[in-house]
Image (cartoon, rainbow, N blue to C red; front, side, top):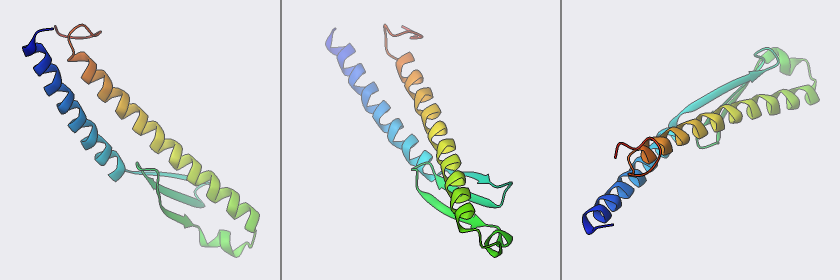
Length: 111
């Protein structure tokens, strides 16, 4: 590998690192929602896998079935987290594919 190729490869690596950081920030800011119990419990999480909010239908609380409420909250949170994880994995895979396509000798490379 000649010095020009090495320098170009280092520049691409820096660009990739910058793009990955931007993608991670973008994904962390995204919101993912899921519900359980026919919409009686709604959970919202971030792409950073943090619970942002839990909404519980007032009639569910009046029913005084603590175990059911706990199960529905867990189900809604887990479903929202699964959505967030899936979206993050898809975006990261897409980013990796586009990065690899720009490296000579890699599948899908232009050079």
